[in-house]
Picture (cartoon, chains in turn yellow, orange):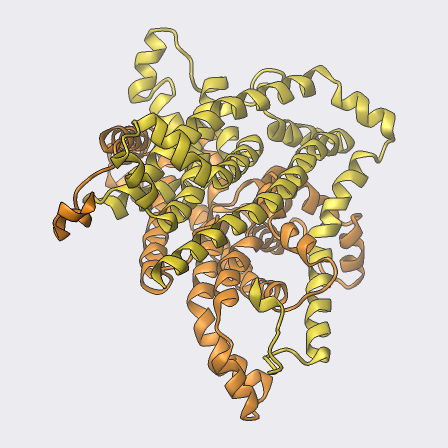
Length: 293
Length: 286
């Protein structure tokens, strides 16, 4: 951030006011066209047929069911990936072991894989003809085309977020504080709760927010395994698609507006946490500078 | 207390003091095996089962090959656009102070926060013939919605943040000395940018473009609403997998998926190696 305010009298590239305001103007124009107007149009479309229609379409049974299912998926996905993310970040940043780099690359796979492929992977394994699926079928357990399948693919798609936020921070912070705590006799749980957790709190919350946003909004993977049964296995994004393809544009955008509101809330929280995170990273590097000096 | 410890003891670099290796590593490995590796093995088995001839026939089917081309082209154009736009955004966010800078910074992440299906129907509506943008473009004789350009647009939208977020930290940490020296010696802004700043930025820029490309290859939700999905013209590869699934042709779906999966794994490994070489200090923001 320090580079934003140019305290030296030296000129730097792009300091010419003409260049500066031209670049800022161009950026704002493109951002308005590409991001702001689309965002506004979601709400404009949602209220196209009036506020009464907007609220009545949100209160339809299918919509309420989709909201409930979406919340259920997020409520199951987030804690599971939170535990996994912390475990993985702890293993990778606190110990050296062969295959550590490979493990970190493997963790990134869900980011690189098309969500449709992700859905297919689960359908092949747990569908009625799959290795595990056929056994489950014999025992009357249905995972695919039902809510458990939706939760499973959502876990897959969102599993890297928490670890990815934690790893760079935990690497930077190093293990000295924790090692000191252990030498002073802290138990594993005390160590985590009293030493590690306060240090990683904001990154952890950040990871949770990103996981939640993606879990709520996942479309491709979920649409492969959901079976799209309206009022049963439709999450909110799937309902948006169903309504849109049914030529119920206003209803589709009404459902979409809920997701857009959540996205805005996510951005707001993210900005706040980034600010906190920046501060804690800065404190950390100041501390480092002091100790090395 | 530390006086009677030998020097070797005070630096326990290789001695494990911290607890939880077996618990954390065990959980991580179990989780990754169950969530990631087992399903991927299932895909490999399914593809092996179908035999080479049939596999080859499916993945080189004319309609599928057309979808590879469209997907690759659209993803390439979208990520090149984001290379420029992302660099511009990062530059403006880091170098200038202006009212609304914080809001702009937050807004950059909108494409990640907004569910792709929402982005899809929004873009499709805006760029359709009677939409806000579609009307203007129509009068200029340009059609975006329901053409391959719609695919480029949707891919570009969903991957805007990548380049910004990889270039931004590097630009922030760039030391001003060389740049100021160049300026003092009377070089033009452009030549200092080209000779001093750009060489420092381009590994990050390339990483951002590659991430944006990878994401675009796999993008589904935002694309299908605006693409029109005409066979041979505007079908993306993810859609071909989806179509095969709807026809209950699991082997075909797996075959195409294996191609997509292989491409994304190669890209992922390449990006990771590249990052390890050039960007040791880059924080991996998604």
